[in-house]
Length: 458
Image 1 (cartoon, rainbow, N blue to C red):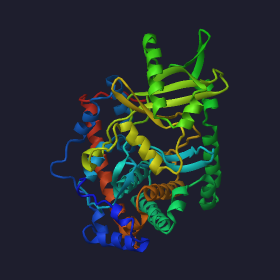
Image 2 (cartoon, rainbow, N blue to C red; image 1 turned 135 degrees about the horizontal axis):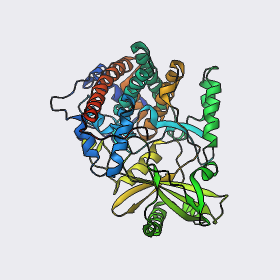
Image 3 (cartoon, one colour; image 1 turned 90 degrees about the horizontal axis):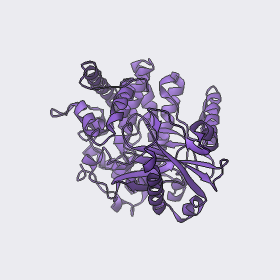
Image 4 (spheres, one colour; image 1 turned 45 degrees about the vertical axis):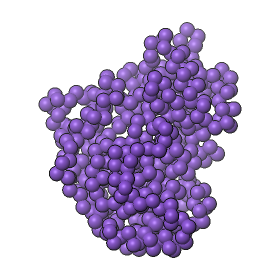
């Protein structure tokens, strides 16, 4: 795969018009219409074998919870099967243009969060699989998630297809807009909530304002009484089995000191100055997400100057090799956590100031703030109008992220002026959504046959 990707570094010396023309020329070996095709390869592995392989290094007791969450719906299955789709995308046509990609750009991995300046922006918010790779892989996974979620919502095939068209057209239009910007303006570009208000339909504004209000309430101060209690006069994180719990007490101090010491080495000097005022108080493991269930994840409580009115929660999450690396080549970073942090800083308009990494017992972890005005919408409860607008916003945010990390003129030149690529992606998304349903049915059958153990409703 990696030898197929063409480095665009030599093109940066050319004008935007020349790079646009170079992108257009790539259609000769990879027509836009070719992206419509999806057929499984003859040697396509059993999807359950891919899932089982990814479980080998997970916490065994939590794997049934992972399967239980994937069993909820085909959409949840898609969220948990990035490795399967990565394998499948590697057999699809490649434009030859690479940029930093999310690697798991489904609808649920976008949302609102706070910048260091305390402004709210809408952006990609998950980077566990991020690598340098084909930009179209992100767009195809996003488009597929639109059809899969749309079907779950009861939307017609025509409506699902139109939502994909709206998303990809938004990506297309914004990519052209970014290709005309000065590079410095592109670097500062962001989809902030005030900008969202200007493009939102009048009927959608109240819902947008409610989402913004919810995001603003998701802070460390508000989380503190929900996540902690006092034990023997000491503030501790509440156990909530099987989702939150503590290691045996004799290991607690070792975990805390090792985690925090390694993390501080990865932070910038100004963050070290800030963090020196915070005292680590407690650490607990936490079950998160769908795809991440079974990976090691912890939350750490720190208190500013030891005071309960200044809490800081950090999430320390296991970093594994990206599911895309078998097809894009190995990461150039010394550990997977560095890959994730670099990808997030490169793709996001503004990133968490507490991003960093650490290592403990030969496991790599990346670190971020647990609650920082983050909010993601539940796409499986949206009306068609809201769903379509949300898909457009995701296309916009993804275009900005790809443009920031890569060459928007090359991508825009490839996309051109027609809707050929959007039409092709709508075809692909519907076909791959069918494939996802077949794979989901395999998991359901395996659980019913008791070949796989799943714990549901957790």
